[in-house]
Length: 134
Image (cartoon, rainbow, N blue to C red; front, top):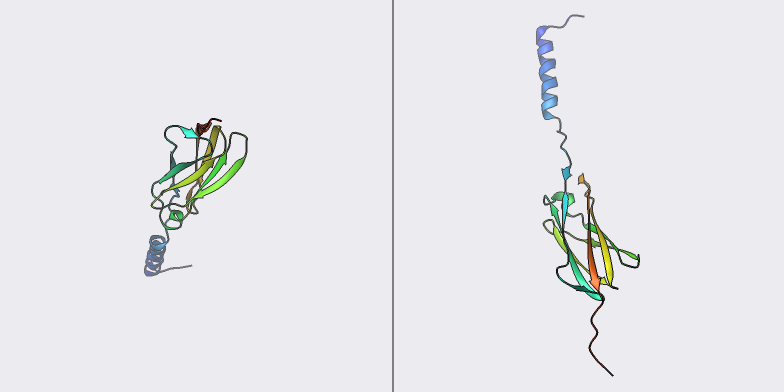
């Protein structure tokens, strides 16, 4: 088989052009979750606000993915919630049903990035009485 120098040159240039125009593989973004836990004394039977900050700020379809919360109450009951994100941050209000330690697992599983998970704990103390005596 005999090929001309021009044919080989064209084939080489075509191969180089197809490599240059091929989509490049990009690594998935690795996200981290920073949790804003309750500050101060948390009483049972009250609302507690928990916040999540996802960094770097997710964009595109990753930006519309919420953070999932799995809340384990002191008696072992498990509840789930979602935190919709706005510019990578969001909050959720949860009710503390009883005194004791609460464990909250925050999970962020975007379609194009690496999932992130972090755990926070806080304690709720018994609610003070109304101070009404009989």
